[in-house]
Image (cartoon, rainbow, N blue to C red; front, side):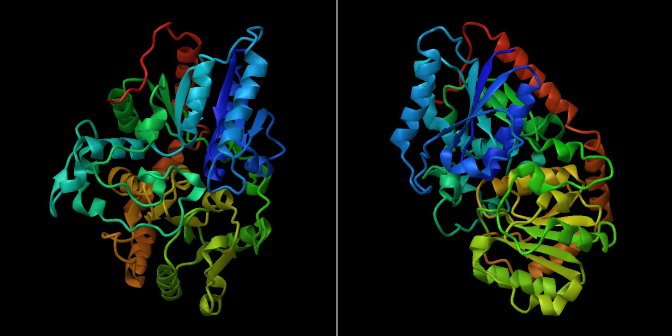
Length: 466
């Protein structure tokens, strides 16, 4: 075996699933992995996951029963029992989700080096850092402020700074400052995650060179440590589905959340729709539009002629009363859990109205699905900008995201995304690029990480921001 590696997952499925896939990839390279999770996530672990799992007490103030002191004690006790007597070789490193930066002090007691792990895109990290570097707060209307080292098309504009603050507590228990607060950071602020990754000997991202080479290079240069692209960390069946069959989300992810439809219901509905004709609408499990904007969206869907699947979050409190009778079989409305991998991978799906969370964004890109971007918070705005400006496979639902999104905005966006043939061709090129399985550049990133961590010199650089 190549040695042991700890992988610490943050809170929520958007953190857990990439960490599980990372463990699988590391295991295939002869590392022994230990996945550290909050005990509150234990029920979300699929039975098919075969790597070692260490549950610790929740340390998140938005998780019922959280006990940060107990969580720290759980982790330290485990490390002491296994590595404190020097009989057991210490782990090679701990790959720490940025939400779990508090564990650094515990690992340092055992001289275990830290790899800072980002489940959001390298683009978002680079843009947040770059905005701080160029002091973006004073950008004037009509001005474009370039970030040296990043593509010109990602230059910051005044409209990039216009954002609404989502209501409610920060989902997933992200830190109470910066991006994780649930609202946008003040332009020019030091990104909150910098403190969380300080002291790391390398960075790791759920992305690959094919998608984000300039952003990975920028982060490596700016942070002064290697930045490995090892993803997107999506399930094996996403990259290599069984011959002639569709992806089953429930089999892969072990989700036991409630829904008003089955996977078979969704497949039968999609099978009856023309290739590339369906718009899928979903905002993930943590954020969403306002109640008023949901009504504007419903109005747009009732007036467009496009077939659609709308997955309405369980916690949104919104019901699309009357919409189903208006649209008939043209629309499929899902309340609760939706089989997203199945939907974006089906040949009938051509567009995705998305909040542009990184997992959803990368799932769509890999299947050649165009994106109507409706970002809600933080990193999603940067993902949306990359999709629209850099990859040119999407459209932003509104220019001024500080104002309520209107029905006409949504209707215009739907027609732009679903009707733009050139955009469709560019999206199809990404589908072809990723049609041969897990990206070769991500495999190369994992191999480079293995070389780095098994042969690291006695003295290595660490992330340090003065």
